[in-house]
Length: 432
Image 1 (cartoon, helix red, strand yellow):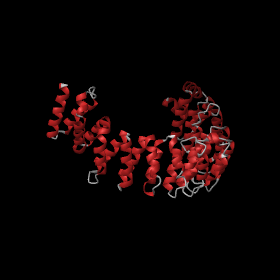
Image 2 (tube, one colour):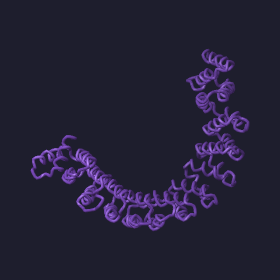
Image 3 (cartoon, helix red, strand yellow):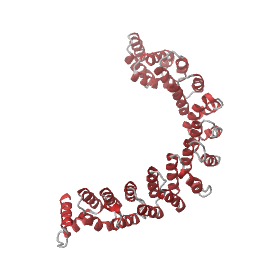
Image 4 (cartoon, helix red, strand yellow):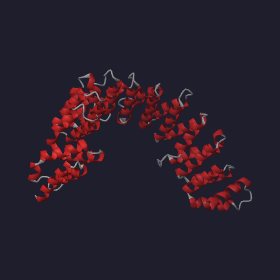
């Protein structure tokens, strides 16, 4: 009791001296301390609220940030003065920012109503966005209020955005009402949020959105369907998604490549390969498809990559193909991936003469961990480029260091080695 009274006296003295740091300290001890439910503190709650408001209005950034936590503990007694700050157009923006944030954390029906009304009235876009986010964080209790805002053109975007933050099944019905809204932003936000739910009403909406006039909406629809691979047979998703590979918007086409890779069927791989092989396909999309074929984790996907390496003529794509082949982690496919890389090494393909390609092949073979690659890698030491040899050494060390080292030592005793090869082996042993 004496300690509480002492803190109250100290807080008042600090307030009179404009020592906001001390006021904050005293209020924190009283409200956040172990005695916060003491009758004397409860009796002085309104007074403590006024002290907290003084810190909120006059303190620096850190003091305001800390006192905001006190307001949450004060609860409903803090709502009215915070609403007054919110509605005061002459109040500084930072102060109103804190009022919005605290009201959102209070999660009280009166606080919700005040935030909704603020959304309707304010013209400050930054504060509007903050209020929308606060309502979204409140969650289920705010859904009814936000749903009412969908009726007005002025508040519909913010209401949809707020509902999208909540991610509870109750938002499905209100969001379904705006999937055909004239505004692209509203349609895109609604489609993205709806994609989070496994509700039978949603897949038809996503399929319809695949042909939306707006690229942003089409992309969200593709992304939404990409996580519903469980429906790929019943909805014939490969057929539905394949046209989006040719979408004039690159981001939509890239999203379609990822979606088809997740389905992972041979038919999906075939469509990816066709677009990859087309001379009309932008290089960025080709790179995305190369990765998608590897992500499929199927033998047919790897075979398509091998065909693409043989048919395409861009160094960038050759490099990407040998790189993704080295990232294959499925134990049932690493041998096939190793075989493809070794066939490239042994071929007369022009890519094999490029330093960056040879280096990438060496690293990929080292990553795959197949000891079948040791001998072909050692033969790459005959290359007269030091960068290639360094990559080969790194690959051998990663693959099977002891076995590789023994073979290198044995090779030095072979009188048939060419000078370049002998120099490469010697340099490798030195690097070891």
